[in-house]
Image 1 (cartoon, rainbow, N blue to C red):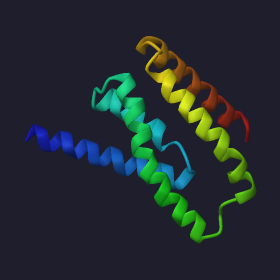
Image 2 (cartoon, rainbow, N blue to C red; image 1 turned 45 degrees about the vertical axis):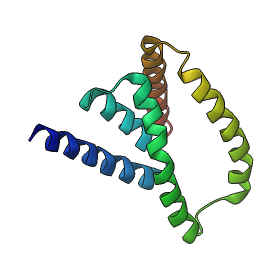
Image 3 (cartoon, helix red, strand yellow; image 1 turned 180 degrees about the vertical axis):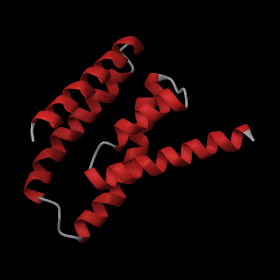
Image 4 (cartoon, rainbow, N blue to C red; image 1 turned 135 degrees about the vertical axis):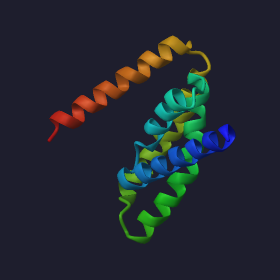
Length: 122
């Protein structure tokens, strides 16, 4: 019974992640990290790495739907992809070098800054 509940939590977390990622174009990974950390008690480093691994297929599905609906700004997309690849490589390398206590604080600070900007940018 306990394993079924654990599996159910993973599935619900995946559904929420997919909905947020598809709806907002991002944010699913943030919710996924929080769910992995606080609901499923996964290690901080593994939560971040797992999140990015899960987001890739979700992003592909969402991008396909956005593409079919003509919603992608290709001029911007092409310019950001190169920087994103470089930044993703650097970030993945840094993840293993940052101690968990600092990673948690950096992530929390990032979330606070993003929330404040979103609230006051209206």
